[in-house]
Image (cartoon, rainbow, N blue to C red; front, side, top):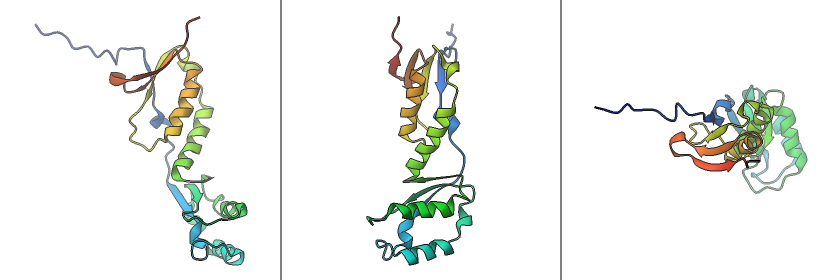
Length: 170
């Protein structure tokens, strides 16, 4: 006689919090401002302003944009702000930094708006192993929110989760 196989994970009370569920769909683009600097390092204000005026900003329509400088140029703060004034009317969001910085900013907005009350006093798994580029910082933000409400938090997959937090019993 063969024993019935029981999926204990599927039958458990564990709530899974998967950051991929909140991944904002959309094109992410980096704008490297060194392309408008003389030899990639020197900002000549008149030339810089002219290059920005002549750039096709419509190509960033409905995209998430990270503005950065790929060289070690020392640029004034107003330069990236000026680039932002051109791209912002077309982009969904603009940040200073890398694509990872952009994803972090997107997750920060999303995670701060969620209602975590449905996880009150429940054992949680903060799902790992993403197929989408979820930044590590999003996990840090999520665990801080979940820790306020959850009974316990583990990280990973239900079959091999690592315990992170357990609420103290009163």
